[in-house]
Amino acid sequence: MNTSRFKIISPAGLIDYRERAGEIADASWPEFMLHDPVANDNWHELFDRFVDYQFALLDTETNRMAAMGNSLPFYWDRDVSDLPEGGWDWVFLKAVEDHKQGITPNIQSAIQIAIHPDYQNQGLSTRMVQAMRLIGQSQGFKFMGAPVRPSQKSTYPLISIDDYIRWTDDEGLPFDAWLRVHARMGAKIVKPCHNAMTIPGTRLEWEAWTGMKFPQSGQYVIPGALNPMEMDIEKDEGIYIEPNVWMVHEIG
Image (cartoon, rainbow, N blue to C red; front, side):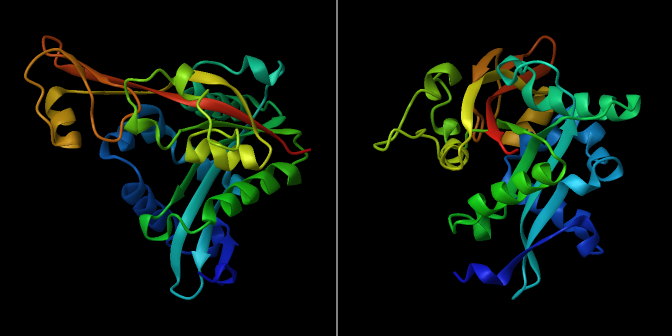
């Protein structure tokens, strides 16, 4: 594919930017991933408070949005090795609260890079990460953190994230494709964030999200999940806790 046909655009670059971005998210993630309460309650904040940290990749030949990137800034006064277990949910809420309090940020966090399935496996991931890094550099930040969702972990849901991040390929790079993209660009694995995202739902909701049935309480392996989901029939509640991996890019 001729990659020169793609250009980075800001949310101001398309009148229907948010609608197109939503279509990419819907096409890229398992249905249950679209029901994280933190994301649903705060997604508008990316554009209301942090619009300069959002971007997309436009296919100029077709006028289609091929990929989108979301990040935000926050304040962190400890070593990056101390980034918390809360991961994705935590950093989203931290950035919003910092902004509300008027606290000047000093570090960038990736939130999402989503590539439409029609454009995956075509070398666009590196370009998207680089574009995100440039945003942090333009703000004078030294680091960009990323609670990375290891894309192939869903194939190994019974393996702990602690073990999984130690797997390597023949080059000594991370076994996981998304971790490897970041590593090739110089990012270091800091540690797992075991509670990166918590998604609750009723039994009927989980059945709708997964196309599965849950006849009894217990753990279930569900398509696209990195860990098993825990269903409690008496409480009529299933809870999925997603692990991610804190990776840190030195960008300044």
